[in-house]
Image 1 (cartoon, rainbow, N blue to C red):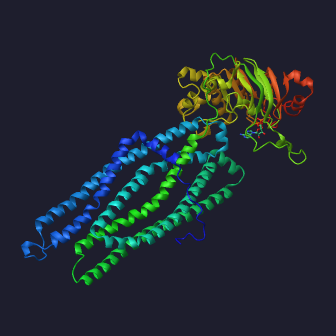
Image 2: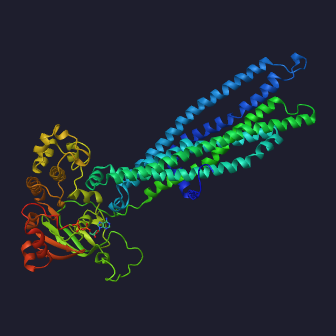
Length: 633
Ligand code: ATP
């Protein structure tokens, strides 16, 4: 039926939880006065709806065709009465419309404000979510909750809640009025109701299934678009020659979406067809029965005005009843949307300021990892020892970092060296508390990072990563991100120190030139130097440097190197080193292998040990002059 084929009706929305209802009510509580006014307006307008059918009865049976003393007891028009009724018939819809406009305005205001509040709350909450959340959640999914789900919530007030209240008042007032006019005719009208209800419920279910699939497909399509039409996605698909694959994937999802949308339209249409059908046949039945009754009595027991008024009232029933049945699923989906938003809002921040957290002040820059154990995810269930013969060695690693202890004194340059996947990046994540350790402690100047405020920790640490992220904004604003109140002189000094001032001055609008999304209009080396200038402005006590492995040309490389030097001066630097020059300069080198510090010392000390470092040096660094070596990773 309704084009649904054999598709199972398996997409029942989750039942509404009372806790969600309470929370939704709380969300609206700042606007309770406005909500009350909207509610009152709805009750008045819906209630006034029965007045016109009653007036029709009066017009027919009293003003137009009533027995009138002026006409010797024969039916004839009573003009003064007719004028009054007609005036009322014009005035009431006018008043209803005016109230309706005000009600729509207020309802929209409340809906949009609630949406604005939720969006703000959600964005704020997401900003404070740990990195773990973003590494495990699709960007499209996060954006969809922020845009679509919060947007969908708005319709709860403006559409759903208003419809429910207005329909309830309409249905109750109409049935009561019908009963007052004629109990038998009311019973007759309501006889057809079960069939109507059954059909409407079927249509509603079909509609829900299709709507859910459409929403899912739309989310998938958005996700594909976001992934593939970004600069990095484009680079990937172009460099792998996967464009026709991507086009095919998009085409398939798009095709699915169109099919679903057609079905959705058709189902919507059948709902109206159903209402139209019942709308037409019930008056006919009422006329038929009225005819039988009157002919049995041999007189007009049921008068024409009563018939017209009654059928008008009756016609007011189907649409509200039909839409109430539909609305019940809409209410469920609206609550499901609220649930999705609340689900995000309830997600634990994990990494938050401890109640006794104190700001980190006068940072000297001593960094210590004390018997640190860390893994990204808790293993499912108990960690069962796996037999070394059956699994690759990598899977045997229980901890990403296993009992790591290292100390970097203030102002030292520490180089982290080791094979790919050893855990070097992970170590640098633990210092700014992007993740928390599972055992042991990370300390800065003897303060456990879990007991200092996150804001002061962020202020104390500067990070220069391999992949430079620049906002789609001017060079100036990108730089100011490091220090929002920096003066022009400071800005230029930082850019000079990072060897990028000359380049910026050459740009068409100098510091006011907009750099493309992720700074793609600048070369790799220039972007890095801009990022370095940004950190110079920030002036952190501790610098984390993830040296780029991508090859820059020799000149570019030298420029980046000489930009880094002033940055490293006088501050503790933890460098994931890929350049020979960095490891030679390092005060201490930590050699990391499979989550452990296996060797530590200066370059010379380590060479004499003839261990992993010596091997790595021989294989990877020895031939390096200036160019970075990527083979270590
Ligand atoms: P490379 O030099 O290749 O960057 P690395 O020494 O910096 O390597 P890490 O990035 O610290 O190594 O990774 C250590 C281990 O942790 C790897 O096995 C990696 O697969 C795993 N890992 C890294 N990030 C995550 C993550 N977000 N979730 C789960 N596992 C991760």
